[in-house]
Length: 556
Image 1 (cartoon, rainbow, N blue to C red):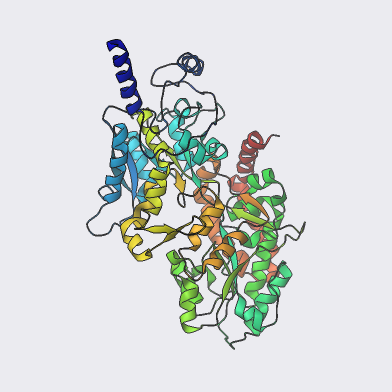
Image 2 (cartoon, helix red, strand yellow; image 1 turned 180 degrees about the horizontal axis):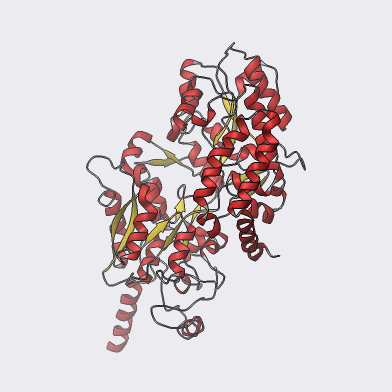
């Protein structure tokens, strides 16, 4: 009987050690451990054998599956110099909340501040001096993968890939996004932070002017030109200072889509994608886009000094009612983070209306294409100076739970938000949230970009609630930025491009302005001159390097 009681007691102790409040749902995703374990020296095959013998992986990284013995982790956090009075990025109520939760599994978290403006140089210095925190992040894939190739970071595959490991993390990130952090040998050099939505940019226009002119929403390049011209020459308000466009000539996005030829094929787009220079060198359609901008400029439909305009002057043009047609961030017209510009415009002109529209149809195949951000943003990695990788990955797994990432981003129900009838979190007081949590929420939620959301639809619905009275604008904006065939920007950067970046930058600064502002009869000669100089810089090598890389991704 005593023996039986002892067994029961031991079982209860065992059970209690594994009971942790707030664990999220786990996934049944199954993968084999890959790569060698740098801490134990065991090969992937030996780790698999151990797992088969014990029924569990050597490293338990699903939050709640293991209680650690008072492990202290150091974690990088961006310092944007925006902390409210009485708080810092390393000492605030949310850091306390993190430690309250992680304390349940024997982990203490200390944060290390890194100025956002010095991200790359600072982490390079810390990695070189072996003073890096246990968990780091960067938006530069070449930098992070370079750390791994130089032996400075941990292969996370042995801590993530097995079926019982990092289950919350894998469910939230998704296999496609997670694989962006792998190399050809299947080593996991980083955890890519998944974007909640990849919608990037939109075309916007003055809908009230369009209606007064009796015109329809444009769907082709020719129709868009007619709208731009009508806004300038027959403005319903009699304004003579109207400008259209404000397109992005140095970073080809939505405005160029109707002209490009490579977008119909995903591989070709990936090879050609990047800056305006990439497209100008590889895709004849890009030249036609700049020819179109040149036409607008020479007909007085663009600001004659567009090249010195800033985001601030564009906001001023918007609020003053001067902008007729332009391209910008996905929800620029009503985004509270950018000043709720339509709301401000309506204070002076209650009838004004600025809406987004779908991209124009491609002139080559009649399809609608959209350009989206890459499916990930930052890269989270663990330096080989970390003394407990298992605990570090467990922390990342906790960030994928509702107790973790959801709460850090959305806050507490009843204090920061309430659920609506559809289960969407609705902000109670945006001003309070701004100083209480919003200033740091993105930087604490390391494994996601743009917030904790499971689907793009969930993101759009929740984001729309942050613009009371303009919810439908937000929903329409995200729909228009996602409609049609979406080509996500690739994350690969050619090392040759990096080497030639200064020379390429000088050519960009000179020739992108020339192409738009020259006389129409000079356009072809200037474009040919630019293409020759790009060739001399070594652009053929860049294209070959990108082609070789994407042949491995998409196949020859």
